Image (cartoon, rainbow, N blue to C red; front, side, top):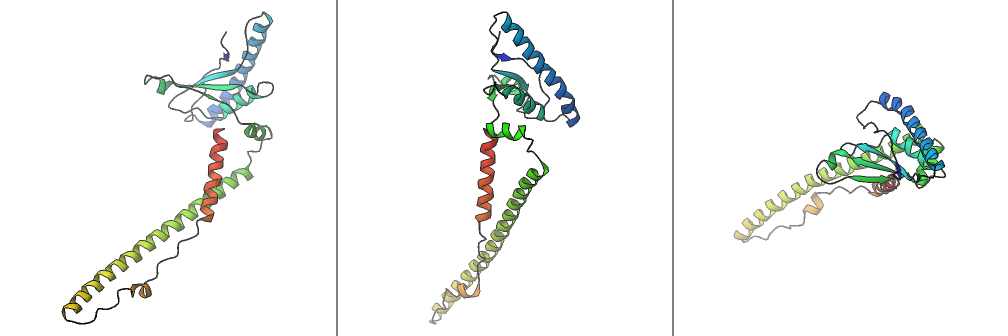
Length: 211
């Protein structure tokens, strides 16, 4: 008897939400059936230690509500060490067996149990994204302004150098070549503090998502 319990292949991300909702009851029924079979095997002294379950995927598409629900169900106490084994069919067809094991982090388990995935939490993520794009647009505007002024300065320096060369030939005193500092004003670089804070928050989200 294999250590990893069998489960039906789950729908990929391209499936409609209605199909995912319809698949959830079947998945729960499969889990219940699997647990019952393990119980019966244990009663007849057959090795039936359930350390996880498996599913197939195509081109890396496997993260969906059905997978999370199943893993949460399996990983609940006393099976907190249960893993989800994902077999990527498309990658395996290229010649190398693709198997990856996943487990929900304790923080995600607690949040899922308390149903903390609310509109308020979603709004916080949206505000962070909007802040990031605002800072990005501000920095891009600064770069455009800086490039425009630097082009003007370069043109002024080229013209002044030509004028001074002509004045030298006429035995006249050259004109100052640093007057551009008075004539042109480079834009002030916007503060990157907000962007750095948003980036740090995004990195923490990535770490939390991968745990």
